[in-house]
Length: 392
Ligand code: FAD
Ligand code: DHB
Image (cartoon, rainbow, N blue to C red; front, side, top):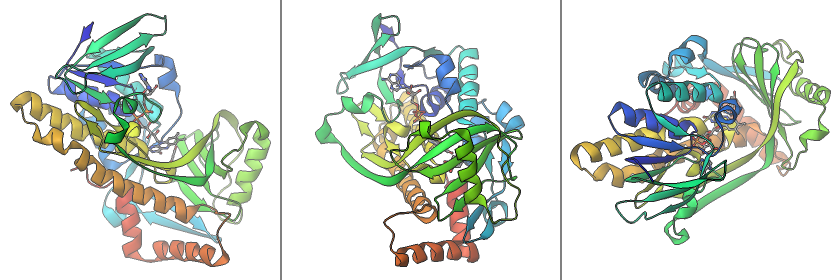
């Protein structure tokens, strides 16, 4: 049987940042990850790091490549009704964001953990968590080669994402679930074409939402609003480029030039929160506890914020046997989580096409966009949330 202080399930941003934060305070952990290393390092997902997330990655020794290759953005562009407006984060709130792929963050975190002797067990899927109401919980796992084992620990960090197993270890009557689904999805591609603009462009268009993002000076990340049940197979690349061009037509900025498509996929738009984020010796963090619709670019950032709170609570426990921060963990996280839910739902509602909208509701949506781009107070509120609410 393996033995450690904190058993971490999942090597996503939450699990890896937690393990690094703990190691820096002399607390031991073992990370169990169901997939292989190449898979987790290659999974194309988020791209926007809040100001505080970027600072934290640097502070834990995983920021060197991000600072060298990440793209610092001082604002975003919002487009609607033929008009283009810039929200100037630097001027409004004195902060910026960094565009740097989640898979790069993952590569950097894995490299620093392994280099410092950290334990990450890939191809190791947790299938049960027992003894949570005892002082010695156990995570049971099986390896890709069919062998199995157990990890005994003082605490379990459930960092295993939305489809993970840890949340299921909690008796259902101990949890409240809050959920909202949106009647559309995002069809995202990664393509070998230079970004059309220096900054991200969020577009509200009659044909549906479009987002232009990027990963490097030669690679763009593009998203189109699509049907919930959209079949990516029905979209030859040519059709994607034409639809994107249609949603971006009529503005001055240069067009996106079609390029080789490196990855494609459809992502649902869901909001989900579980409360509390703790059951006895199990602490849920990141997507295991909450999902936000992606329009506010908050998911990865929330995962990092959760484990910062958790690491501080665990440090207080191991250094002075304090339980108060562990007891406060869920409430502390959920206050920030609900604000991120509010922001993400608001951005989603403001920027997408809703087939069910009445003409009245459509005009309200345009008025919202007009207000947010013409009032300094409203622009500042968007900027404050986008760059990230304080971590403390
Ligand atoms: P995950 O990254 O899901 O990691 C969980 C890990 O646990 C995985 O590696 C999984 O393989 C492993 N696992 C699962 N079950 C088990 C098990 N039983 N045993 C062992 N291991 C297990 N967020 C942003 O902040 N900004 C953005 O711009 C953004 N854009 C996005 C765009 C897209 C298309 C998508 C899909 C997501 C986006 N997100 C964004 C959300 C972001 O990717 C997630 O919120 C983030 O990955 C959450 O991190 P996590 O560590 O909690 O979970
Ligand atoms: C990206 C994803 C988002 O959800 C978002 O709001 C902005 C950018 C991205 O993947 O680059």
